[in-house]
Amino acid sequence: MNEHYIDALKALAEPNRLRLLWLLIQVNQRITIAEAMDVTGDTQYNASRNLKTLYKAKLLTQEKQGKWVYYTLMPQFEPHLEKLVESVRSLPQENFIDIMSRCKKRLSMRVNGECMVGPNSEEWLDKTS
Amino acid sequence: MNEHYIDALKALAEPNRLRLLWLLIQVNQRITIAEAMDVTGDTQYNASRNLKTLYKAKLLTQEKQGKWVYYTLMPQFEPHLEKLVESVRSLPQENFIDIMSRCKKRLSMRVNGECMVGPNSEEWLDKTS
DNA sequence: CGTATACTTGCACAAATGTGCTTATGTGTA
DNA sequence: TACACATAAGCACATTTGTGCAAGTATACG
Image (cartoon, rainbow over all chains, first blue to last red; front, side):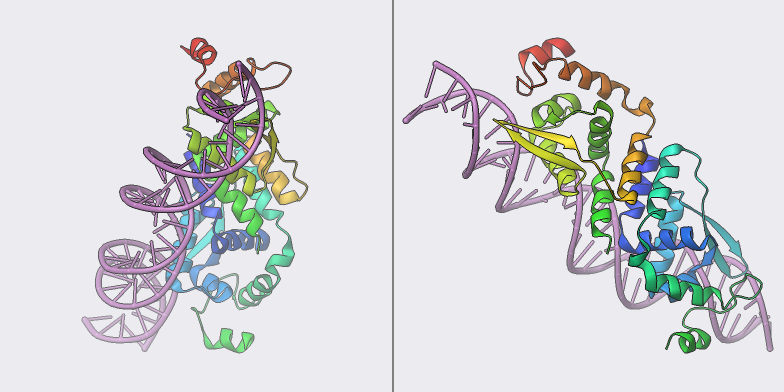
């Protein structure tokens, strides 16, 4: 009963995942696990698993492209899920200022909208030092 | 960071509590633990703790009156919390039909809007047998 | 008073969840 | 084919969370 909704709530009830979904809502763009790692500072295992958890809760879509896996916000059509995403969207930006600026920095390293470098690259470390 | 919001999500990410909050939203009325027990079939410990968890997450208010403790939906003023409650409100009724009818039955046993009998009373068992 | 009733809290335990490490899979490139 | 790199999956472990039982607090009522 409402298991899908419960899964979504559980997926969001964890700070790292909430932050990830918030980011994906705000940037309105797909991101790779490598990019998520750099932006959040998470380990590879955690970035991968947290994105996958959001995917299993049907909040994200997954798309493999070469060696990269892109995750994107999934459009919701049922009212309760739509409103849940809207709720996350309304979270005050103040709590995410640094993560947002890191994300913009990381996305600016793309070429033609494609992720080119892996996690902890020279280019990234230069940008953030 | 957003701990209050995370608490609310956690509180809702459990079927029994989600059901309780949905009920409180729909009936738009305070209810006692005794009533919650009868309606959900939960034990006293669980009804008490689940309502208290929702209270600690600031989704409900608590009001002691004589030997009864009434819980009521708490009005939300921050957009993300408002929308979270709206999301729960939009959950399809189909999933709650039986619980809703039991709740109406239980509330009809009140006198002047006050709960008069405890859990598993004769009157209640008669009504639902 | 003393007893019944509504509710709370502490403890023990099982189940679920998050994390880290290691290893495996799969893809691009030389 | 071999190697580098992005991601996933398996395992052990600590933390959290839900549940049941028992004892405790508080209020009503005779």
